[in-house]
Figure 1 (cartoon, one colour):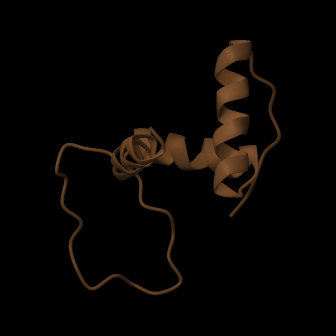
Figure 2 (cartoon, one colour; figure 1 turned 135 degrees about the vertical axis):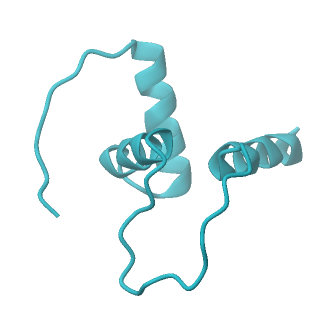
Length: 75
């Protein structure tokens, strides 16, 4: 997959939150941002093997559900 390098302007607080989440998940910021954008555009990352089921749109983003559950557990 071809990668490009780019510059963007983003709110400092949003950038700090992105960096914190990436560190918490053990990925770099680029990987997390790409995953967020793929979810936004409803793309499935390329898998090494073909999936044997059809994805279902349940109207929720799994990472948001997991994040909410993690936040509840911490509280």
